[in-house]
Image (cartoon, rainbow, N blue to C red; front, side, top):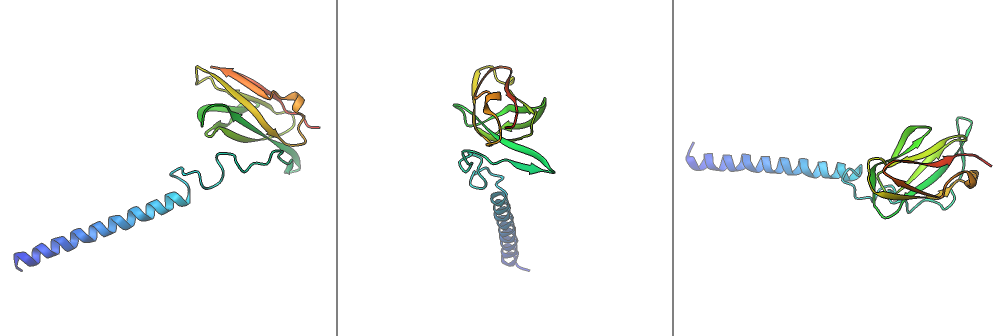
Length: 154
């Protein structure tokens, strides 16, 4: 085998490796976009734009439930601020607006103790079957917890 044939075989192998890695990266990108792992925000609605102003009530295993929509003012996300339901962490403010499923008698709190500044949260909407009188519509937290209220149904 001459040195030219050897040179072409090395180039051919290098080309095969380049094509293989390119195909692998393209497939990984397609999978990441399909499952929204890159965070483009186009799938679903993490910005909360598709929520109805008054959310309907529903039944879960013959138990009545409702939904609350809470929003933090002035920031896009607070991943360390969490919503507590009956003392248990339920979800974090990964986006500025979150939707929470609640049942009668649930105590809803916001824990923003990870932040040392004043944060303001608003109750944006609630299911039509929830009494808004039992809930705070504006919740201000400064490095601690604050109660949204106890969920009562009409």
